[in-house]
Length: 265
Image 1 (cartoon, helix red, strand yellow):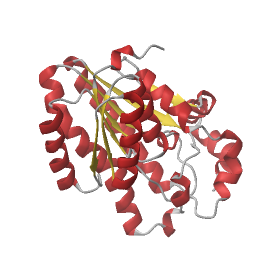
Image 2 (cartoon, helix red, strand yellow):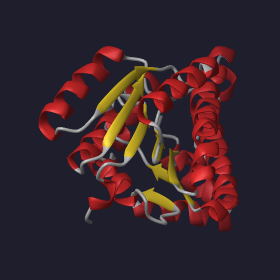
Image 3 (cartoon, rainbow, N blue to C red):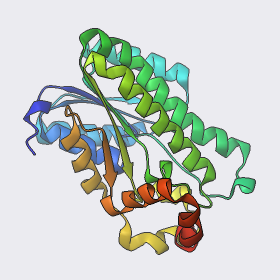
Protein backbone atom coordinates (compact mmCIF):
# COMPACT_ATOMS: atom_id res chain seq x y z
CA UNK A 1 0.00 0.00 0.00
CA UNK A 2 1.29 3.45 -0.92
CA UNK A 3 2.30 5.62 2.01
CA UNK A 4 2.68 8.95 0.22
CA UNK A 5 -0.08 10.36 2.41
CA UNK A 6 2.33 10.25 5.37
CA UNK A 7 4.89 12.59 3.78
CA UNK A 8 5.49 15.66 5.97
CA UNK A 9 2.95 14.48 8.56
CA UNK A 10 3.91 14.76 12.25
CA UNK A 11 3.75 11.38 13.97
CA UNK A 12 4.27 10.80 17.70
CA UNK A 13 5.14 7.28 18.89
CA UNK A 14 5.36 6.22 22.52
CA UNK A 15 7.48 3.26 23.52
CA UNK A 16 9.62 3.93 20.45
CA UNK A 17 13.01 2.74 21.71
CA UNK A 18 12.57 -0.84 20.51
CA UNK A 19 10.18 -3.53 19.30
CA UNK A 20 7.26 -2.53 17.11
CA UNK A 21 7.60 1.13 18.18
CA UNK A 22 11.04 1.37 16.59
CA UNK A 23 9.89 -0.56 13.51
CA UNK A 24 6.90 1.77 13.07
CA UNK A 25 9.28 4.73 13.32
CA UNK A 26 11.52 3.31 10.59
CA UNK A 27 8.63 2.80 8.16
CA UNK A 28 7.19 6.25 8.87
CA UNK A 29 10.58 7.89 8.30
CA UNK A 30 10.96 5.94 5.06
CA UNK A 31 7.58 7.38 4.02
CA UNK A 32 8.79 10.96 4.61
CA UNK A 33 7.02 11.63 7.89
CA UNK A 34 8.45 13.80 10.66
CA UNK A 35 8.73 11.92 13.93
CA UNK A 36 8.58 12.53 17.65
CA UNK A 37 9.85 9.47 19.50
CA UNK A 38 9.09 8.95 23.19
CA UNK A 39 10.40 6.36 25.64
CA UNK A 40 12.11 6.02 29.01
CA UNK A 41 15.44 5.07 27.39
CA UNK A 42 16.74 8.32 25.90
CA UNK A 43 20.03 6.70 24.82
CA UNK A 44 18.24 4.22 22.56
CA UNK A 45 16.03 6.98 21.19
CA UNK A 46 19.02 9.13 20.30
CA UNK A 47 20.67 6.26 18.43
CA UNK A 48 17.47 5.66 16.47
CA UNK A 49 17.11 9.39 15.83
CA UNK A 50 20.60 9.60 14.33
CA UNK A 51 20.03 6.55 12.15
CA UNK A 52 16.69 7.72 10.76
CA UNK A 53 17.85 11.28 10.07
CA UNK A 54 20.90 10.04 8.19
CA UNK A 55 18.98 7.50 6.13
CA UNK A 56 15.82 9.43 5.31
CA UNK A 57 16.58 13.15 5.86
CA UNK A 58 13.45 13.67 7.95
CA UNK A 59 12.98 15.61 11.17
CA UNK A 60 13.17 13.35 14.22
CA UNK A 61 12.75 14.69 17.75
CA UNK A 62 13.20 12.58 20.87
CA UNK A 63 11.97 13.09 24.42
CA UNK A 64 12.47 10.97 27.49
CA UNK A 65 9.05 10.04 28.83
CA UNK A 66 7.61 7.59 31.33
CA UNK A 67 3.94 7.58 30.33
CA UNK A 68 2.92 6.45 33.82
CA UNK A 69 4.01 9.87 35.08
CA UNK A 70 1.04 11.99 34.03
CA UNK A 71 2.67 15.27 35.05
CA UNK A 72 5.59 14.42 32.79
CA UNK A 73 3.19 13.52 29.98
CA UNK A 74 1.63 16.99 30.15
CA UNK A 75 5.00 18.74 30.22
CA UNK A 76 6.51 16.74 27.35
CA UNK A 77 3.49 17.17 25.08
CA UNK A 78 3.53 20.91 25.71
CA UNK A 79 7.14 20.88 24.55
CA UNK A 80 6.19 18.85 21.49
CA UNK A 81 3.46 21.28 20.46
CA UNK A 82 5.83 24.20 20.98
CA UNK A 83 8.42 22.50 18.77
CA UNK A 84 6.33 21.16 15.87
CA UNK A 85 3.00 22.97 16.08
CA UNK A 86 0.63 20.09 15.48
CA UNK A 87 0.36 16.32 15.80
CA UNK A 88 -1.29 14.43 12.96
CA UNK A 89 -0.96 10.87 14.27
CA UNK A 90 -0.44 9.51 17.78
CA UNK A 91 0.63 5.89 18.22
CA UNK A 92 0.12 4.78 21.83
CA UNK A 93 2.55 1.88 21.85
CA UNK A 94 4.13 2.00 25.32
CA UNK A 95 3.14 -0.96 27.46
CA UNK A 96 4.33 -3.92 29.48
CA UNK A 97 3.04 -7.05 31.15
CA UNK A 98 3.88 -9.50 33.92
CA UNK A 99 2.51 -13.02 33.70
CA UNK A 100 1.34 -14.17 37.14
CA UNK A 101 -1.76 -15.76 38.57
CA UNK A 102 -4.07 -13.22 40.19
CA UNK A 103 -3.18 -14.17 43.76
CA UNK A 104 0.55 -13.81 43.03
CA UNK A 105 0.45 -10.39 41.37
CA UNK A 106 1.77 -7.68 43.67
CA UNK A 107 -0.01 -4.37 44.13
CA UNK A 108 2.97 -2.59 42.58
CA UNK A 109 2.75 -4.81 39.49
CA UNK A 110 -0.98 -4.21 39.21
CA UNK A 111 -0.58 -0.44 39.51
CA UNK A 112 2.39 -0.48 37.16
CA UNK A 113 0.54 -2.25 34.35
CA UNK A 114 -2.54 -0.06 34.64
CA UNK A 115 -0.52 3.16 34.98
CA UNK A 116 1.42 2.42 31.79
CA UNK A 117 -1.03 0.44 29.67
CA UNK A 118 -4.18 2.38 30.52
CA UNK A 119 -3.68 5.67 32.38
CA UNK A 120 -0.56 6.58 30.39
CA UNK A 121 -2.32 5.85 27.11
CA UNK A 122 -5.29 7.97 28.16
CA UNK A 123 -3.03 10.80 29.34
CA UNK A 124 -1.19 10.97 26.01
CA UNK A 125 -4.47 10.83 24.11
CA UNK A 126 -6.00 13.60 26.19
CA UNK A 127 -3.09 15.87 25.24
CA UNK A 128 -3.68 15.54 21.48
CA UNK A 129 -7.48 15.30 21.32
CA UNK A 130 -8.43 18.96 21.84
CA UNK A 131 -6.21 20.18 19.02
CA UNK A 132 -7.29 17.35 16.72
CA UNK A 133 -10.91 18.26 17.38
CA UNK A 134 -10.17 21.91 16.58
CA UNK A 135 -8.50 20.93 13.30
CA UNK A 136 -11.06 18.21 12.60
CA UNK A 137 -8.21 15.98 11.60
CA UNK A 138 -6.03 13.32 13.15
CA UNK A 139 -5.52 9.64 13.84
CA UNK A 140 -5.04 7.89 17.18
CA UNK A 141 -3.71 4.33 17.10
CA UNK A 142 -3.80 2.33 20.32
CA UNK A 143 -1.73 -0.83 20.57
CA UNK A 144 -3.90 -3.23 22.57
CA UNK A 145 -3.66 -7.03 22.40
CA UNK A 146 -5.56 -10.21 21.66
CA UNK A 147 -5.35 -10.57 25.45
CA UNK A 148 -7.88 -7.75 25.59
CA UNK A 149 -10.36 -9.98 23.78
CA UNK A 150 -9.54 -13.36 25.30
CA UNK A 151 -8.36 -13.50 28.90
CA UNK A 152 -5.94 -16.33 29.62
CA UNK A 153 -4.61 -17.91 32.83
CA UNK A 154 -1.65 -16.14 34.44
CA UNK A 155 -2.41 -12.88 32.63
CA UNK A 156 -5.42 -11.68 34.62
CA UNK A 157 -4.03 -8.21 35.31
CA UNK A 158 -2.46 -7.76 31.86
CA UNK A 159 -5.67 -8.91 30.15
CA UNK A 160 -7.71 -6.56 32.34
CA UNK A 161 -5.51 -3.61 31.32
CA UNK A 162 -5.92 -4.45 27.64
CA UNK A 163 -9.69 -4.92 28.07
CA UNK A 164 -9.67 -1.38 29.41
CA UNK A 165 -7.70 -0.12 26.40
CA UNK A 166 -10.22 -1.68 24.02
CA UNK A 167 -13.19 -0.26 25.92
CA UNK A 168 -11.63 3.21 25.89
CA UNK A 169 -10.68 2.96 22.23
CA UNK A 170 -14.13 1.83 21.10
CA UNK A 171 -15.86 4.65 22.99
CA UNK A 172 -13.31 7.20 21.78
CA UNK A 173 -13.90 6.14 18.18
CA UNK A 174 -17.60 6.99 18.47
CA UNK A 175 -16.84 10.32 20.16
CA UNK A 176 -14.28 11.32 17.54
CA UNK A 177 -16.03 10.34 14.34
CA UNK A 178 -17.94 13.63 13.97
CA UNK A 179 -14.61 15.47 14.15
CA UNK A 180 -13.09 13.37 11.34
CA UNK A 181 -10.58 11.84 13.76
CA UNK A 182 -9.76 8.21 13.05
CA UNK A 183 -9.28 5.81 15.97
CA UNK A 184 -7.75 2.37 15.48
CA UNK A 185 -7.07 -0.47 17.90
CA UNK A 186 -4.27 -2.93 17.14
CA UNK A 187 -4.73 -6.37 18.67
CA UNK A 188 -1.69 -8.56 18.05
CA UNK A 189 -0.95 -11.96 19.48
CA UNK A 190 2.53 -12.63 20.87
CA UNK A 191 5.30 -10.66 19.15
CA UNK A 192 8.98 -11.58 19.10
CA UNK A 193 10.26 -8.61 21.14
CA UNK A 194 11.91 -8.02 24.53
CA UNK A 195 8.39 -7.64 26.01
CA UNK A 196 8.74 -11.21 27.24
CA UNK A 197 11.99 -10.51 29.07
CA UNK A 198 9.78 -9.06 31.81
CA UNK A 199 6.45 -10.76 31.15
CA UNK A 200 7.78 -14.31 30.88
CA UNK A 201 10.77 -14.53 33.21
CA UNK A 202 11.07 -18.33 32.98
CA UNK A 203 10.71 -18.40 29.19
CA UNK A 204 8.08 -21.16 29.26
CA UNK A 205 5.44 -19.18 27.37
CA UNK A 206 7.85 -18.16 24.61
CA UNK A 207 8.89 -21.79 24.12
CA UNK A 208 5.25 -22.85 23.89
CA UNK A 209 4.18 -20.25 21.32
CA UNK A 210 7.44 -19.56 19.49
CA UNK A 211 6.21 -20.93 16.16
CA UNK A 212 3.17 -18.62 16.33
CA UNK A 213 5.01 -15.44 17.32
CA UNK A 214 4.65 -12.44 15.04
CA UNK A 215 7.61 -10.55 13.64
CA UNK A 216 7.67 -6.91 14.84
CA UNK A 217 8.39 -5.77 11.27
CA UNK A 218 5.17 -7.42 10.07
CA UNK A 219 3.04 -5.84 12.79
CA UNK A 220 4.63 -2.44 12.10
CA UNK A 221 3.78 -2.70 8.39
CA UNK A 222 0.13 -3.32 9.18
CA UNK A 223 0.04 -0.38 11.59
CA UNK A 224 1.70 2.06 9.19
CA UNK A 225 -0.50 0.94 6.29
CA UNK A 226 -3.55 1.82 8.43
CA UNK A 227 -2.42 5.39 9.13
CA UNK A 228 -4.86 8.06 7.96
CA UNK A 229 -7.31 5.40 6.79
CA UNK A 230 -10.66 4.38 8.27
CA UNK A 231 -9.32 1.13 9.70
CA UNK A 232 -11.29 0.25 12.83
CA UNK A 233 -9.24 -2.68 14.10
CA UNK A 234 -6.13 -4.62 13.17
CA UNK A 235 -6.23 -8.20 14.45
CA UNK A 236 -3.09 -10.29 14.09
CA UNK A 237 -2.87 -13.10 13.26
CA UNK A 238 -6.34 -13.32 11.74
CA UNK A 239 -6.85 -16.94 12.77
CA UNK A 240 -6.24 -16.03 16.41
CA UNK A 241 -8.94 -13.38 16.23
CA UNK A 242 -11.42 -16.09 15.26
CA UNK A 243 -10.91 -17.46 18.75
CA UNK A 244 -12.29 -14.24 20.22
CA UNK A 245 -15.41 -14.59 18.07
CA UNK A 246 -15.96 -18.16 19.29
CA UNK A 247 -15.27 -16.99 22.85
CA UNK A 248 -18.03 -14.37 22.68
CA UNK A 249 -20.54 -16.85 21.25
CA UNK A 250 -19.64 -19.91 23.33
CA UNK A 251 -17.61 -18.79 26.37
CA UNK A 252 -18.22 -21.85 28.57
CA UNK A 253 -17.34 -24.29 25.79
CA UNK A 254 -14.30 -22.23 24.77
CA UNK A 255 -12.92 -22.12 28.33
CA UNK A 256 -13.45 -25.84 28.86
CA UNK A 257 -11.93 -27.01 25.60
CA UNK A 258 -9.30 -24.29 25.31
CA UNK A 259 -8.01 -24.39 28.90
CA UNK A 260 -5.02 -26.60 28.11
CA UNK A 261 -4.07 -24.53 25.06
CA UNK A 262 -4.51 -21.20 26.83
CA UNK A 263 -2.58 -22.22 29.94
CA UNK A 264 0.86 -22.07 28.30
CA UNK A 265 2.56 -19.56 30.58
